[in-house]
Length: 537
Image (tube, helix red, strand yellow):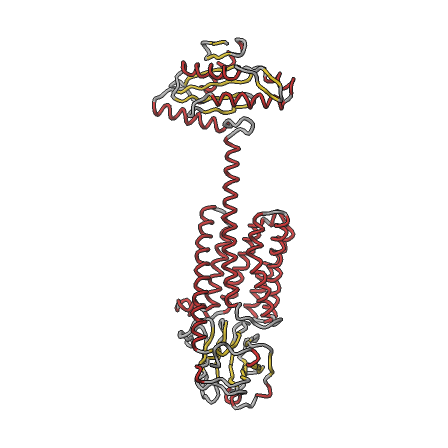
């Protein structure tokens, strides 16, 4: 069969007429000499006025193979295909009354029921609201249907992925409460709108498609929103404002220039404005690409994810701009590569955001750990022990149970620091607190109140029992010397005990324990006191 696959590129000659004469004259061949051949196998219309294109085969196309003229990536282009010997054209577009729902939106398909003889031409009149290359091919019915099935599957997967990512972005915005994540949500929503309009999926919603589906200005607006929102999100994600302020100024300058150029393009429609906008867009993506590389050099974890997500998009954007500038021929695979690039970039960024959330959670837990526990001794910090005591007081009153505390410090601790240095003093404190904690019950609490002062909470414990616990602590601490740097040091502590009274506030309870501690100091140290009774070694 002749059409088992698309006709090779060299079998199709493409020529363009830079005017819009009467169709009858074109079909009669009156303007054939005015057609200028172009390279490649694509119709690329850069003007907003209708123009004619001539497609000439270099070998016969058999009608038995059910040949179809396929113009891929039609976007918003409207075409009239004039077949040899036909008085009326076949009109095709994605949107509007000439939309053909028999085929997918990947291409405008025109049957060639009589086939084409070698050297025979057909003419195409194109009205292009914006510049968009349409790669050409002649395919059999089976090839077109197979391509349509693959197209629908791929586009559905990409758009579904983008919708899921948008939902996740909304979750990040709500969960984290960081307004910058709204840029990510806006980026994804704009990309979904852009892809569904340019790909034709929006025609599944006829009312919406009728309002905006055929308006290129809406597409330009969605594209601009996607670019600006993604740029600002990536700048936030990479922390460019603080880490790379110069690159941040370039991003802001390009963003402002794109806004101005968009307004100009909407007002004038001049092609040069669009070309400049494409170059500014390329500069913006290049700047973000450089920023991610610099971040990788600086070992910024987020930069690795941005580079991984942005590299394919940067390459695809550069390639796309090259197509629009006619630096190289249009590629049919861009119909899928660009949307897939959006989806992959979004997935990688989501993984990066999840990693960042995990890192933030670790940092938060570490900060909470540092705020809750004293770094030197491992005991609770002052704030944490006060919170624990406040909660213990409330629970004791609610359950009508006893509560006692022990307040102690190291005897002659200043002298230890002065004679042996603060490092030895820190070791004194660390070992003494460790010994004290090892003698407490699992539901008791021990915290460093300040300096060498240690506060112990004894829930469900009356004063007499608390005195016994305090004596136990004293014995555990001074029962054997402290071994530090191969040397032995004698150590002792003075302790004060107080029980919660019915009308006590937390400060009053601590004050009574503190007075009991000073009573032990005044009685000669290395003692336990409750303010009335004192025990000695």
